[in-house]
Amino acid sequence: MKYDIPGGQAETLPNKLGLIKPEEIAISEFEGFLEAEILLTESLTAKTKFNTKYILKIHKLALAHLYTFAGKYRNVNLSKGGFMFSSALHLPQSMKEFEDEILLHLPITYSEEKKLLKSNP
Image (cartoon, rainbow, N blue to C red; front, top):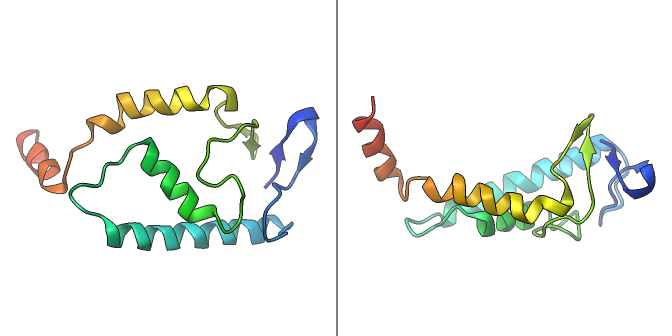
């Protein structure tokens, strides 16, 4: 797991636990997301809104044990395995567009989703 950082240097993403092996970092991230999934599933209600604020909450719950930037938009460009992630400069606007075009159109509740599926076979 290598990340591109300014100046073209490649290094393991710095983390609070001082992990340097990609496998250890991947396991720690995975465990964080599992814990966040359990916490958020248990607290899910009909009033839960899946929007960009909620995505940042997921990110913070999952990765705060590992990264200081958890729950915030990043300010550096990253790539992983040759895949370039969205530019940090455009990330806030891209996420706003994602929320406006996709997230705000999601069904409000599961029961509403079931109704939509039944009416659109």
